Image 1: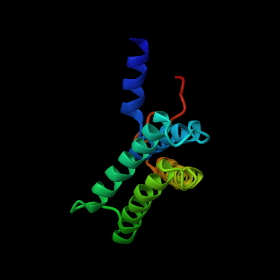
Image 2: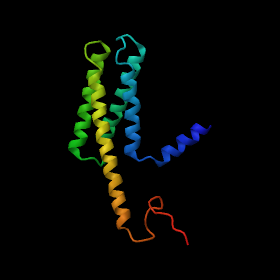
Image 3: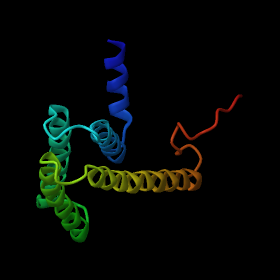
Image 4: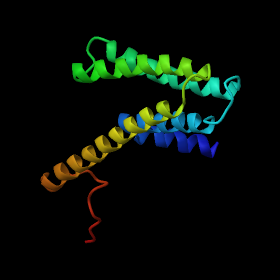
Length: 145
């Protein structure tokens, strides 16, 4: 019960980028856990399937009209998704190495971490420049009377 309450609180305070980063972390960890698995190992296929699902969801989201990402970035995400699907099939047949998929996910995670850091800096600057009394309460220092 406590774990569920913590999870609810965590999800309500996460930004979209933080949620995406957490998902990439979990999926990438699953891929790393099966790195030395045999091609017929069900855990390998489960991890590959999860990774494909995640990338497919991102590609689908990028294809939706009204997506706010730049068109070129959306096209790149769709291309990566297609590559991930094809490469995953080769990994499942024992013809390619899973490390490529791990590396792709890690690169995306680095970008998400950088994006989150830039957002944090921007918010800190905005709070610093905001008139007194309008700053984010979490950013204000406590004052005694």
